[in-house]
Image 1 (cartoon, rainbow, N blue to C red):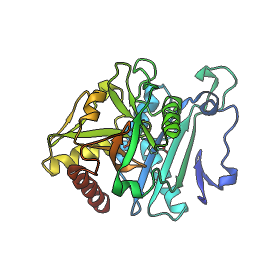
Image 2: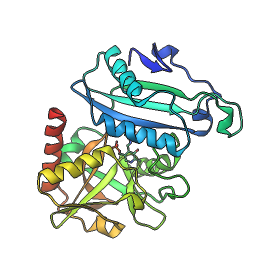
Image 3: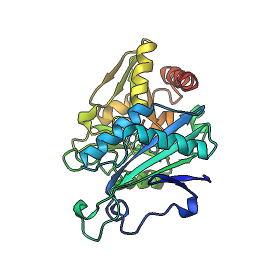
Length: 286
Ligand code: PXG
């Protein structure tokens, strides 16, 4: 349990960290957030996360009431106040207190809060043995409806897919887009490897541009592993040699089964393993 939460400019006890029932973040999912890792006391890819947070806010015409520098400093204060060296940060900006009725014009002051805590998304053993996933029947939001590029507080689309994963007895679900192509998982980006080439859907396929996903691009370059953005069909998943997911909470997780079908030889792939190791080295050196 964290000791202090940053809420609208103050570090408060968790029991005092309260949001109004009239906050539009709660009433309508009107707000944006980030999930960020801290390794050895340093905020991992801080600039990329803040950039995405401010862009998400801009996309929903929400003015974050603190500057980017102040936001970074608030996150650092929160980490310090909790004595964490390795943790997870949840940074949230809501539309703020308004009244019933959708209009953001009723909300004069956005609310900001920052939680530092620990997170474990998938069981540890799945990082060694690989994880099974399904493809969900619920499709990813249409980009012209609610763009998946916005990390908004409205995660019902993803939660509906997660429920399907739970029902199928697996930890995660792959979501297809409105065209039937692969987009991403409920809180992770997806990569496949075929004939030595790493492939992942691009923004046009309806994904959140993951920070961990960009780190994988960098690592592939360093390791001379070809890596491209490519529209993928479910068929491509089934015939892939390897598959893995990336996310701030998940880091890099190998996938060995999709819809009950073994991927490649059903074991964690060699390139996936190399990238997992490179990611481990990268976060220790970052
Ligand atoms: N797609 C979606 C829909 C996400 O929500 C990612 C991809 C991966 O992006 P990053 O930048 O993290 O590599 C996400 C990230 C949580 C949690 O509490 C969710 C995310 C990140 C951290 C924690 O479930 N989603």
